[in-house]
Length: 385
View (spheres, rainbow, N blue to C red):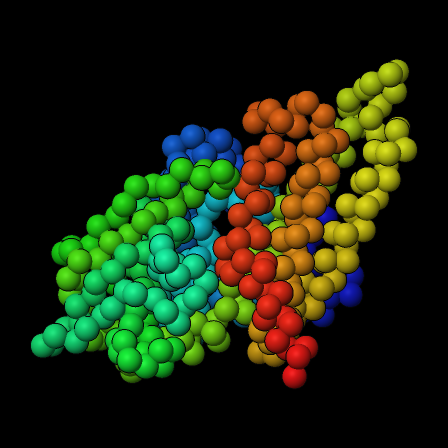
């Protein structure tokens, strides 16, 4: 199985070559380490630099900033492959989102400073949106960046931040004007090395995605130079967030599709080998029908995701359609993970079988990137016009 469908319009020969090379690299450097990363609660830092050296992290970044100059669909391939290998914890999706914020809105000097380090893996990126009391309500964040003298002074806290323990560069959603609502939101870029007043909380213990370092972050009178205001103009943060959210939601769908393909393949192998009542589990009609349902859902989703990737490359993917992709892909992912675990019987509940980890890892997909309830609200708004 592959993210490419027979009718997909966007893949070129370069995508297929990249797919093959990235797949081999992940087989060599990621797959053997999945269990150890889960045990230690973080992906090895060396893996980031290896994927940077392999051209994976910067595949969709301009060549003048250390990238390969490809369209965003190259990152879609990587996200799919990550899931296809049975791994959901590596924070590549967040790295990609950070890359595209800076490439899309950064000043020339900001791009020159940060993109080469992100492309190489020298910098791990994070984006600090969520706060304990706001959830998906980004207009009402409490973190503030107040101009004091020549600097901004950052105060506040964030929670559930992917790559939080390892990030070298964090895009922080903050209010630069508390009186203006959404128009008072700005994105401040914090380089964490030597940032006085910045502290990382604990590496949060989660139901799944245990190899991802998900953290609380605290900012107490952190001084940020004005040249670290993304784009160089206050009040643009909410606009920047809204323009990038379609990609954030689509990349979640790409990962979901990869996980689905992995789960189906693992289950087919299991039911072909396992026997009960004198026959293979695969030979029971219920097994065959359940797998037929899973496969059909996967192929329908594949066509939709491929269409969204094509629109993303063209610059025509709208927020409502991206919300549909995020909502539906993660819903289907959880349905299929549940069915595939059930077909494993008691062994599906044992963590040494990948399907158990897939089941646990899948649940958060319906929460982060905007909950599926928020996705439905956004979709409904596009209908009620």
